[in-house]
Length: 495
Image (cartoon, rainbow, N blue to C red):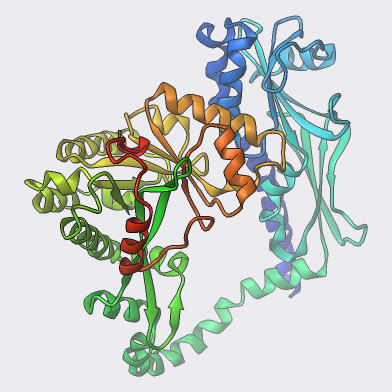
């Protein structure tokens, strides 16, 4: 074990450096995302107008609580929470900004409005215009906790000379300290016996290599049996036998209780393993290349549902989830075109839901735009799913005229629990009107949430408050019982 100690120390230093880089990378990303607010187009707006832009931008920053603009003298001009701020940035902060090679700095201080400790990112342009972003101190823990989970490492993060996070316990065998060369913070980490043991265990593969070779023959003769019992094999069999079922969750206009459409959701009840969560088998299908078969199965069922129930779908639609990888494939678009080329009644009652699971690069987005245009020419509408989370944000919807925004349930669950959720929803509502996009809110389970959304102008609702996902016969019965009050008035999502 002694021979491993120098290597363990090198790894300790490497992890500490990774923590520093994780914090630097996060704040650099925030600066890039907000830098456009310093352009004349935004910065010179009166606060009464700029406040909407600030609120619109804040929800794309994860844990950010407030954004403010300030001038070269440090006077705060506008914040996402106040129209008429009356405070200034400290001169010491302005000096650090001026001395910084990247025109950015950090501060750890007490917020004037809440008296809570907060981490504040400041950055400025060459013209002296600046932006401050307030984060809870927990953002630092979120950025480094996975790195320091190895070997039960303890750590502390200091901003300037103030401790922002301190999870050290004084029972350490070795410490490491690294100061950022970009922003004024230092990461201090410590390790104990658990670190050395985990590091040693992680390197035991060399000694175990011989044992692994001895198992190869055994594994070879049992591979077919193992494969047949595996989840992947079971999924392939379920797809081949078309044993996956599709349930439909109604989307309701809460103003009159009418159903404007439904989302098709695939379900799998395996005869051996029982109900398998979509959260497990959908990622597996994407990983092993089966997602296209599942999507075609769901799409075919949606097409059949509409074609055999035209009266029920006179002014309604069915949505189908399409993965990022599939929407970029030309063969998928051709398959859809072949199914719907002359079926305009059906295609005009289909919505494809896509999520920007990762950022599309320039070439990918060019392909995406071409494919969405081809789908639109058929009459298919496109919805942006999980809007406001992950990568599905402003930059994404600003690059293509999508038809529908689906607001993620995370906004609903936090409604009423924080001061930022309502302004964010107001900003999304304003944005949807500006872009002429319909809005559906997902995950509504309580009456209080329903009324709060109604007051904010959100009427199209999907969630357990109205109905869980249900099989086709029950869904058709639900449609029959929830007809629009005026069949001549089309639902907003269909306009």
